[in-house]
Image (tube, rainbow, N blue to C red; front, side):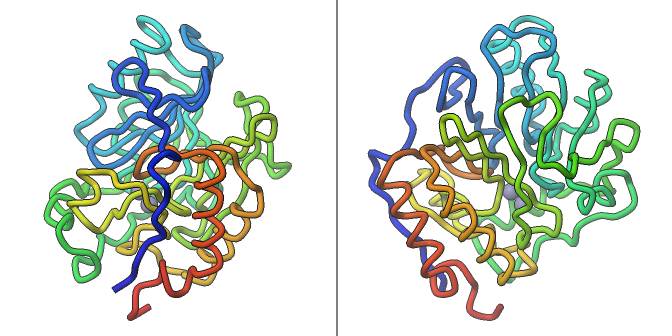
Amino acid sequence: MAQQVPADPSSVVDDIAEHNTREVASDLASKRLAIVNAILVGPKGAGGGDWVLVDTGVMGTTGVLLGTVEARFGPGARPAAIVMTHGHFDHVGGLEQLAAQWDVPVYAHPLEHPYLDGTRSYQPPDPSVGGGLMARIASLYPRGPVNVGRWLRALPEDGSIPLMPGWRWLHTPGHTEGHVSFWRETDRSLIAGDAFITTAQESAYAVAVQAPELHGPPMYFTPDWSAARQSVELLAALEPEAVLTGHGPPMRGPAMREALHRLAAEFDRVAVPERA
Ligand SMILES: [Zn+2]
Ligand SMILES: [Zn+2]
């Protein structure tokens, strides 16, 4: 059974803002939606434009997400863009509705586009890897491919992110081929998607209590563990001050960095399932 790297509880970001968002900076917050996080980037009260939504939660949580968006950015708030770390079902739950409602561009790595333009669906999660959470996961799994082709755009090859100034995207494959993370050098903030996570997504207990632990990507999807290890090594080498992941609370500081380096160094033992 794979393990985790425990982190000091003091590294968990517990600055709670409106709608139970966890705030890493005045313009950066993580909102938990059932089993997954959406990230809100941009100044509070920004209203229309000048902010970006990273990932869109799992199916059935779009109403809650819209409430959080209005609480943070103002009534009728609408982002400049939606930016995707990857196209897994637990990150695209609100995507079709929100892209249409807001009529804004959706940016993703070109390798994720087939999963976002109606061409293909990811394989359903493998219930033999994991355990307690699988019944819930299965019931949330969508019936058909997601299609936001009308709004879909490729992230520019130069690493910039349109409408997200100060941030750069990094290709961090392994969990999916086109998985990307987002990095802001000025305050060393990292949005890591599912490249690594801060809770055990395979365990319903850990998801419920959100224990401060660093884990590799969720096991029930990740097809390329070698690439996944290299991606964690790349992200650890950035020496982030704060990390916001797709699952689990944001974390910050030296204890988080130490745990992240241990995760990278011991990745094959800690993160990779035995049968992989
Ligand atoms: Zn994922
Ligand atoms: Zn995920």
